[in-house]
Structures are given as structure tokens and as C-alpha cells.
Length: 179
Image 1 (cartoon, one colour):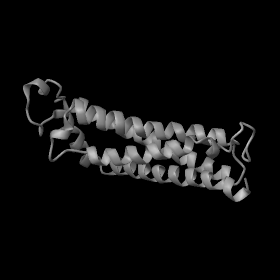
Image 2 (cartoon, one colour):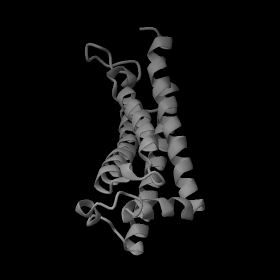
Image 3 (cartoon, rainbow, N blue to C red):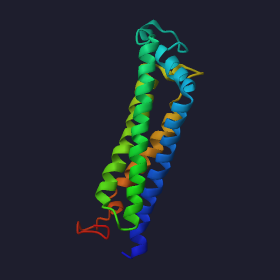
Image 4 (cartoon, rainbow, N blue to C red):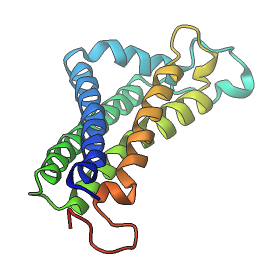
């Protein structure tokens, strides 16, 4: 494999992780600097006040604003840590491209950040928010489409990140160009 071809996939990983890092950094920054906007979103989803009001579901509602706000602060903290990991991974992958950084470390840090994003948006927003708190029923406070877009992007980035050739491994298991 020539040097150009061996650097194409690490470049793709760098750009994909960098894209998710930028997104997560902007999300965390927005939630910190404009705390009230998404605070209302979280409060409405947890309170289930815009769902169908089915008695079989409404027992799940969290009406305590203190618990709602604690959940929101935990979300922002999670977003911030994920953003920091992804920024670090982007820098590490850029080092892999310059052959100054170990690809394994870049891969681990990137995978950790991407998994955090997948857990937050997949398990948290789609699973817990969408199903447990019936967010899908709300016309006003439904973030399922946005969460699905983020899960798709982060999932694609994770798959590309974990490809053996992205890490510089040769097909026969021998050490690749970045090893």
C-alpha cells in the first residue's frame, strides 16, 4: 500500500471525529451559555406535560424541577466531557497523520468520546426520553429526529474509527505504517 492510500482512512477518521467534536463542543457551549432554552426542553420531556396524558404512562413523569435540573446539568457535564475527549482524539488523529502519535491511543480516545455521544443520544434521548418519557408523543418537545441524526453521525464515525486499516494495521495482522 502506498503512503497516500495508507493515510486516506486516518484522514477520514480525523475529519469525522473532528466534525462530531465540533458539534458536541457547540452543543455543550450552547447549553452552558443559553442554559434556559434546553432546560425547558428537559423539564417538559421529563414532566411529560405535552404527551397524551395516558394514566398508564403518566406515573413515569418527573415533576420535581430540582430533579429535572439535576438531569439537565448531568447532560451538560456528559456533553462537555464527550466534547473534550473528541477534541483530544482529533488532535491525536492529526498526530497519526503526521506519524507523531500512536494510532492506538487516538483510536481509544476517539472511541470513548464517540461511545459517550452514542450513549447520550441513543440510550438517553432516544431510549429514555423517546420511549420511557414518551417524547415521541409530543408535537412541541420532541427531539427524536435530532437525536437520530447525531446517533447516525457518531455511529458512522465510530465504525470508521474502529476499522483495522484506520489504525494502520496491515491485513495479515503485521504492523502497519502507523505502528
